[in-house]
Image (cartoon, rainbow, N blue to C red; front, side, top):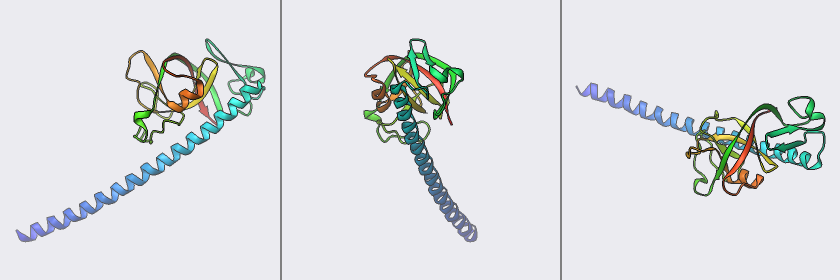
Length: 186
């Protein structure tokens, strides 16, 4: 009987050690995923800044004119689904509805995708869209590119919860009727 207990204790120590190793691997993978997502978000913010500059110039290199029915491409961009030099490809898949924003109480928490939430980032929560979906969200003529990385909003009439940074970028201070288009990064 003592030999059986000794064997079980040794097995338990081995299993405990393996569990600890796996927990370390999971933590490292989560850290890598978070770092990758943060890099993608920084890149998206840079792309959005470039797109915003092109819109302000009214150039044919990706100017987007926002109307009540969503976005329509202008200039040379009107010939196809994407603007020359643009960092995101327009899909033509659009929707609209009420959006809100969230941030202060969620800073540093994990999102549904496992990313760390940063209220100044350009992210969004959706009940329906797959995590990892990129959107161009427009409100009153201003646009922002966001990554869907969380779930919500949990108020039925609303379709998106934007991070505080994304909401500020487009001037959304409370609730607002937004237009959104699914976009694909190049």
